[in-house]
Amino acid sequence: SASINRGKVVYETYCLVCHGEAGHGDGPISSEAGGPFAGVRSLVTDEVVRRTDGYLYGVIVNAQAVGRGLMPRYGDKIRGMDRWDLVNYVRTLQGLARNGGGR
Image 1 (cartoon, one colour):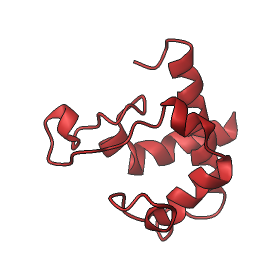
Image 2 (cartoon, rainbow, N blue to C red):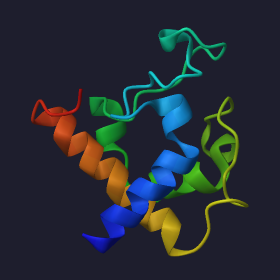
Image 3 (cartoon, helix red, strand yellow):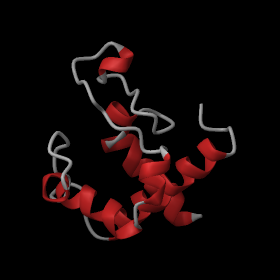
Image 4 (cartoon, one colour):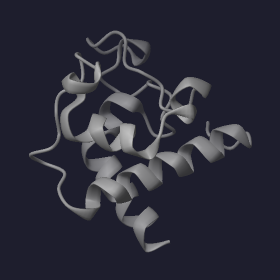
């Protein structure tokens, strides 16, 4: 629970603006919400759910290195256990979406 709570703080600081409150890729600067950035990925799709925790960690550290070229790298901003806390929080968003509570 402490990890998820910390992950939520990190998510709201760095991720929500693009990925949206529930992880659907509809954050305020995404084109889906009227912003300038097209192609913001939903974090709650079946494809992302099937990715490993290590993959999600790698995207946080250096998105370009794992094929997410449009996403900036956050390895210099999100450090240490905050990375794993963020992975845990994204998994929580995915669980909420699967159970109908993600919107």
